[in-house]
Image (cartoon, rainbow, N blue to C red):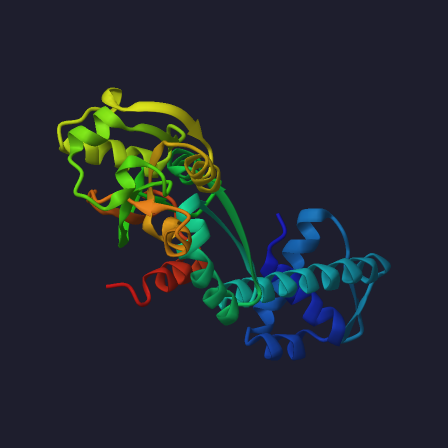
Amino acid sequence: MMTFEQIIIFTEVAEREHLTRAAEALHLTPSAVSSAIRKLEDFYSVKLFDRVGRGIVLTMEGRQFLEEARATLARIRAAERVLGELGGLERGALSVYASQTIASYFLPPVLMRFHARYPGIELELSIGNTATVADAVANGEAELGYIEGTLDNPLLRKRHITDDALVVVVGPEHPLADGRVVTPGELAGQTSWVLREDGSGTRSEFEYGMAAFGIPAEALTVVMSLPSNEAVLSAVRASHAATAISGSVAAPWLASGGLKRVNFDLPSRAFQLLSHKERHLSKAAEALVTFSFEGQP
């Protein structure tokens, strides 16, 4: 079978039509060059050179093969350049999944800093909930995933990035909007809830936090589950229901008075970075990991 080395040797000899000069250019002995040509000819039963006097010249078959050999070497050199550019982060692609809160508030400045440093890397960001993000990383659809809260998946490596405060918010006319301290029992017994869908990190962390106060998820009166933070907040503003949501998401509405924070403290949750334990991270992914932790405590 033809080797890459044989193609190089043949091309050098063919372009010079001289074994010794080709051997010097290749830093090989003339006998090694001659042997490589002979093996190529013998394996394929094709005569590539004629020995004319003390010199060599290409045969018709040799001239035809030289065109293919040059094209092959050009493709290999192009492939080498691609690898060099990939290794140097001059080009490439990176697929990232993130849950809604992180994708909307934490990740955009991180991605913009990354793009400013590596403009040749094509970033593809997909948004889902914690469950879909974890599945994407586990299945190899994404190299990196960003989620909120806890996760139990033995295939995935989890790295803590920062913490995020969950807050309970209601509309301005809600009975719990007056700022008085609220007990877990009051929240469970006197409040209906609009929450994110099952599989959402926001919902799972809220339910986990309430369980720590002795309030199981089934004790909460959930009147509606919605698939986005914006939909949840719109529903709460138009009703007497409450929700638990990231403080970052609620901040503009709290500042404007469109929502009120209930005086009840929930445990903070973690923003986590996911990668597959058994999959190699590309250099682009490794670089984004570094950017994700910049400026974090």
